[in-house]
Length: 236
Image 1 (tube, rainbow, N blue to C red):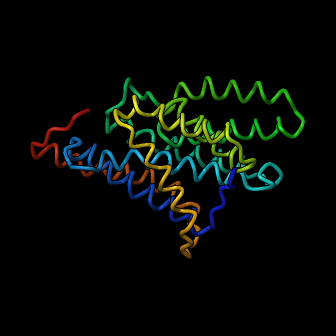
Image 2 (spheres, rainbow, N blue to C red):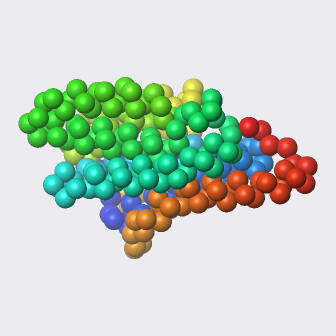
Image 3 (cartoon, helix red, strand yellow):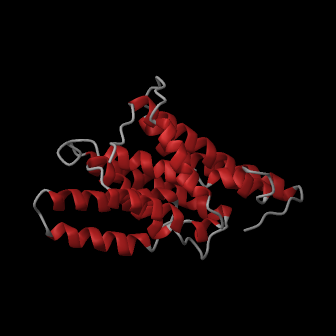
């Protein structure tokens, strides 16, 4: 199986693309009641791209030794908590604050990947911990188990290209169809394949992408307050 090798600038470009798609999707959802054309469909690519970027970065050599898992998990937890109030206030959830926002989805992927990584290093008890994180954590976060399995399969493939991991990633994307109401998540595959040939020179903005998520939700919430007072109705 061919290796998935992306230049650092390409990884950053994928993050920017995912951020733009997510922003357009949220503007459409929270301000325009999903009435703007194409933004909802395009937004279905955002989560898979964020997951691919996370899984690719976690699969870099020495992630356990240099503490990258712990740093990533702490950042995701911190900014996930900060994003929770506006996330709930904007509405559109199944029940109360459920499911937890996308940063917690990425947190579950990070914790499960670390457990798998440690198990592969000769500590088999971590396989049980990984399973527990996937089963329990995946039940509480946005996009549920398909998103978590996508992250694990992509990370597995990056470390050791194999057919089972590739099929698992495709099946995880396909499993998002009933959640999204369409199959647009699968469009992340050609985007990812095309990205292998694109090598932009982009700097890494590590904290920007963490901070942007709660900040843009807060901004949308604040924008919606005067719109509601002016008579706009919003689906919640």
